[in-house]
Image (cartoon, rainbow, N blue to C red; front, side, top):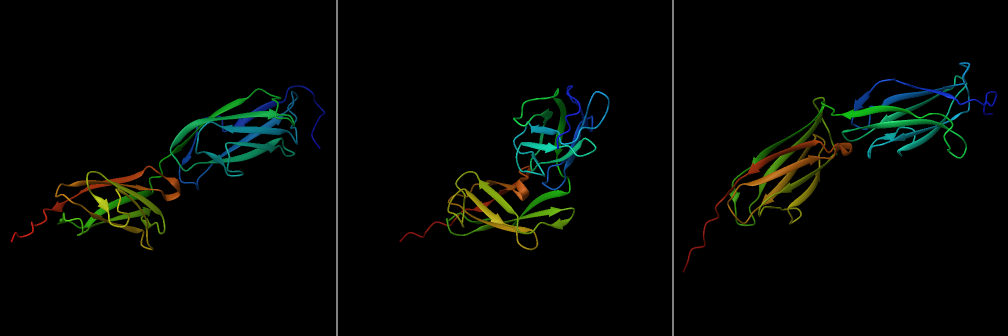
Length: 228
């Protein structure tokens, strides 16, 4: 039952009181606690507390949305966990509300930030270069993903190429591949001219779009057909 022994405006405290940070990897999280008391300092249980996030990708571990309503326990506390899969900085708004979500307290704001997970890495290397620019012969680029030195298997990588180059698997200037058990994906390119092509790769491991790499792939001039 909701504690109604005090009809004054609830006092709301949010911990931590300073900027909170976590890695943007959909695994690490920020723990937030809201404590509700009356004006005598007595904890109020069964109070509804609304948590709202200002950024696009951050969600609550408890529910994958930007808003969550929790209920205080006997200590007047409700705990939530913030997580994200993208680099972003935003504001968490916390308010005690009634059953219709009307504010019953002053809102408390806390700044949160999700930062790069330096344990995640991407690398690319040319395995086959200087294929003939005849629209058939292929160059090959291997792209690897790792986390703390370990391969990231079965993760999606997107690729794009400038100029006249295309990927053999799609016949287009964009392609997608999944890393194998060793954390490596391979992309095969063909071209109709012998100019270097700029290829860019983006790793979408748990939507961590900030994993990016690129290189230039060279094609050799195709020999002209001998005339009769």
